[in-house]
Length: 68
Image 1 (cartoon, helix red, strand yellow):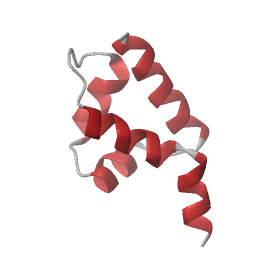
Image 2 (cartoon, one colour):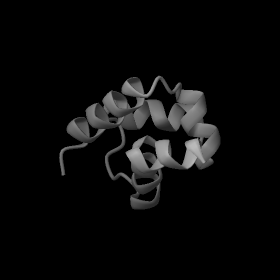
Image 3 (cartoon, helix red, strand yellow):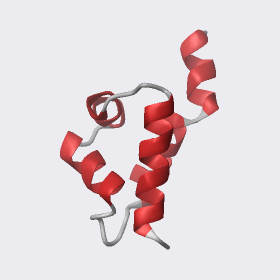
C-alpha cells in the first residue's frame, strides 16, 4: 500500500469538492492534523476506518446525501 498515493487521492477528492481539512476532520471525528498527515503520506500504517470514512466523505455518495 502506497501511503503517499492514498494521501494524494484523499487531497485531490477533498479539493474537487472544496472541502476543508476541518470539514472532513469534524465530520469523521478525527483531528485536522490527522487528515493532514494522511494527505502527506505520513501515516505509516493507515487505519481502515479512517480511510473508509475519508472515502465516504469525499465520494459522490456524500454529494447525493447532501442534496437530500
